Image (cartoon, rainbow, N blue to C red; front, side, top):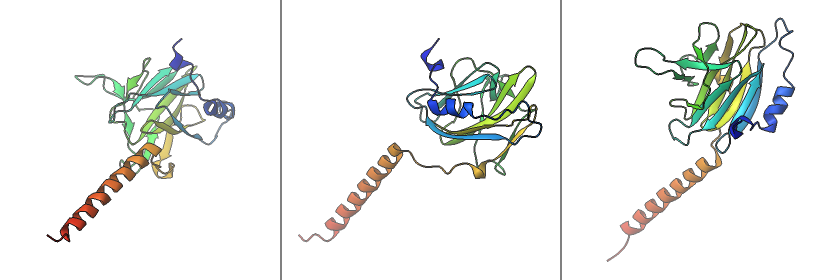
Length: 203
């Protein structure tokens, strides 16, 4: 078994332990778990109903996220026809009305090896489907660059999951981003100061 398949952060195990008994609930509300778990250094996995979704880093600035599924897991996908290869497909939070729905009629595919998600930099929502014994549970994963911010599932089988992206956690820059911004502001301030001094210099 590959190491990446054994790495499951403790917070995800704890989240899985407190999942409601959704199989017996007739009209249960959607279950949402906030994580803020980075997969920049090591993969992060979530498990629902025996389906596992593993997120890992590709080290690519525009496509930093890869996803792998196992069990009955599948993710929203696009392609598989004409010249378009089958690949995971995400939604941006500001697309359309901000209301995203994943459920019957959405194309889902399994990816048994880490597969790059095109243009997965910034904020992205990936539709998820966990299947067991003919029952499908739909949900989402919210990533921000190489951080899994949250995930959720509809707890009633074969029911679409609808998400309002305006209620997602606010985007908070990572420490490395803050450092780059501060260096940039410092360089700009230094350049402006040098320009101002040279303008009043007497010969």
